Length: 166
Image (tube, rainbow, N blue to C red; front, top):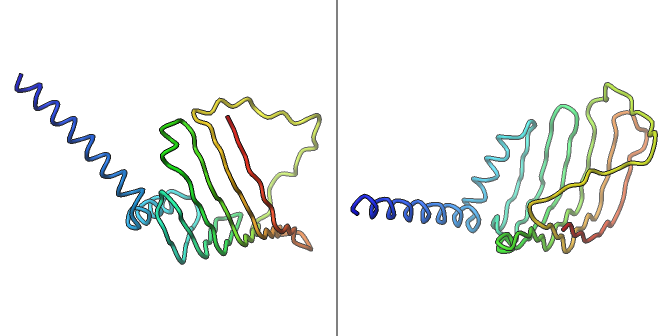
């Protein structure tokens, strides 16, 4: 009986520790910075962010985000992200807002292979996602893509959408 009690107390303490760690990660600036540091170290290129405001649980604002690797350079002036983590309990990822104000993409290397011409209609795979995904508002104010061999950049302004995947 005593072993069962210690086992139960140990399991409860582990669950409490996991809940505290999850709360720390989602709801504090320190947890956000710790998570971003883990993401930065796992990426193949270099990611830098000048300003970070908010929490991982949202809303979150990233200013002057830069990513560089061997083939691409991406600069984003401001990214705003807000979601509802409580919806994960209902098996739904709900993103209330995903907004990027200005994004510049530059390729820094040429591709080794030439693209193959399309031989027929494009068929997307049938995905069975473990949760529904809903994006209430996604917005890109300005996008510029400059390929290394292109004379003129490709530019698009004011892209807005909402998405739902069940």
